[in-house]
Length: 348
Image (cartoon, rainbow, N blue to C red; front, top):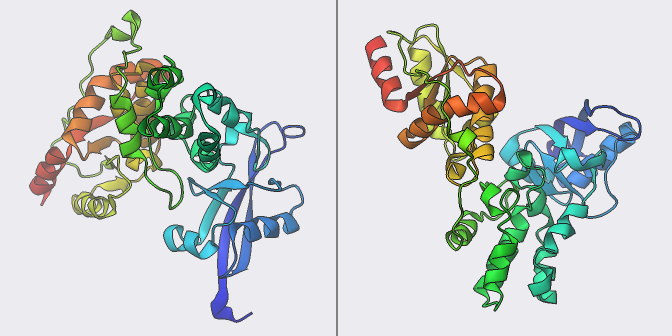
């Protein structure tokens, strides 16, 4: 095998067997793979080196560096976007029985919501959305969430003129586990983005807020404005809420470092954090926002900069409720991009 046709991969792979393991764990592998290899070839190579590694015999889906894909995906495509350091997880770890093998009963259970109104063609379409179902971001915050796939089927059925539009919308509108839980993100590797489709479906439904009287109570007010005269020595994170933000992140990082401060990166910086759920699902909205802020804090940040003023306003208002729901103080100063630029200018 010519050297130029070899990919050297550093792979961190997920292990868990519900019959023998109390908690999941990871093992590291250095693999030399042919450039024509698929992820299935990677899985088989890991299995050869460690027989405890498990994956299904068919319909294999997996998560690679946070994106869900199939075993047929070419390794070169993955490396082109993600690099050669890869982490392999089940598509959804909480449904893992043994390694990448899932208890996937919930997939067809969700279909049963619309089965009374669906044709064989509708069912066949739904079955193509297996990967999309397990890439649902909202499952991370609500394990009973019905999944993005059934929402896509619902929109398709309605767009195709189903006479059961009212029943379809009712079926996907469970107060806690239905569409009100959905803050859609495209987590499928090179997959189609369904933001517009799900937004259109949400517009058909008048969702009432799940907020309770207890939720509405503000137990205290907290000041999160920046009181420091300089950024020097501070650790600063940037929240952008958008995956397509590499250029902005690099510019802000340079500004921060020029101000003798430290730039802090964290995984949720490019993820939505409950903004679109604030009016429809109080608990999940504040859980997502709180998770994002605590991740920034636990990554070392003293200050969180919001790229969008609208996000700044939402998070500053939500932070007290986030603290209550998360059960932790969030000692994080939250400021706007304008404020950061003003302070960087003073430093310069």
